[in-house]
Image (cartoon, rainbow, N blue to C red; front, top):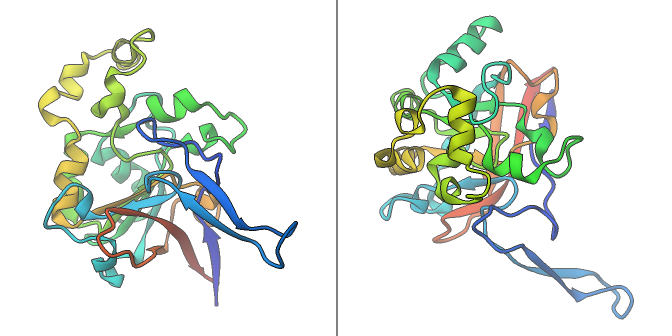
Length: 260
């Protein structure tokens, strides 16, 4: 027997999109006021809400969504609480994960599936502290060292409770909201020049280096990610998208399985 825990954010027409993208559109094809049934159609980017990035997203020869082997979507792994180690603009390094694992008396193994809880799910639109700017533009993200370690450890996918695994200022968000000077805020928060931690020549380093190795990312996790039976536990993890030919990403149902 197993207990199932849902790690997804809810999805709908009002789900906050990644800042580059249009809002999702949901339209009724049939509705009960005039029909005997209810059916909908959607027009949306895939990188909205809980989703998995396929290697094809950044690697022309990489797997599309339909080609991802099932054993790279389901397996044993860890949900690690690093929320006390990173805050606004924080730089995630391998030692944050190994320290969290040691504190929970866990071992990170090569080939594990890895989920990182930063506490950022609280700033998503369904959280008690919902804050769109903070959620998208100020979340923690990986240092180059983390991505290199990820590749060495062959984690089939890494999941997180932020809108992207990439640090926001390692994306075009870095040049958004110039009235707020996000890079300046980050430098003040971390006490280091942004070019020392996120140099321009390492732009989108995580996506550009992990995906070509057929290592994927599951982004915008939430739900039960911080449940006491899930957090800092070794269990089975699955993230299943639909079998979409030539898809570069897809919505996915992400679930933790714990033996009873």
